[in-house]
Length: 186
Image (cartoon, rainbow, N blue to C red; front, side, top):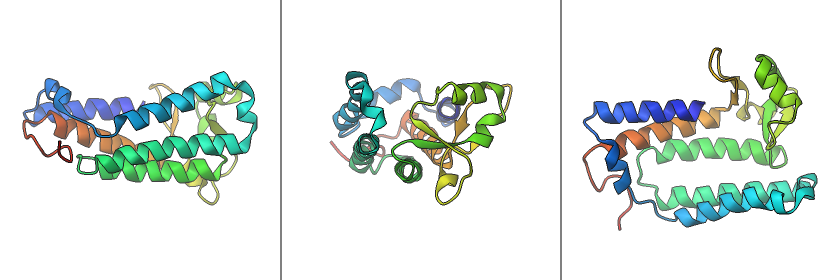
């Protein structure tokens, strides 16, 4: 939900700045195949090897691979608008995820505030999340905030906020007519 709001804000800000949505098709990301491979590996591996989730080392390896691939994409496109905010958010999420065995911690009290989020947590709907009873140590970097009603119930982290801000900044800048300011060259 927070990322959908960031997309809307970014597009509206881009239009307000005289930009066009079609300008997004001109953005060239460097190193995107690495992220695609990392995401596919993270999605397909548990499907091909169902017992994998029982192994802590496998969850940590999957998380490291995914964050490494995204980090490489961010580094390769470091001049892109909003990249620093996305990188800061990713670091926050990576620290929390790696501390909790490769799964993003979800503060049970935050999920419990909303009936649908509570049901999703109890039913195991947060598959890549670990229940956290108290946000100690780096737990406060986990999913400790809730989306207020009447919006779709969900939990999010401070890292998600950073990523959303960076996404909105990127979309807004990418829609504007200025060329050459979004990527690190050809």
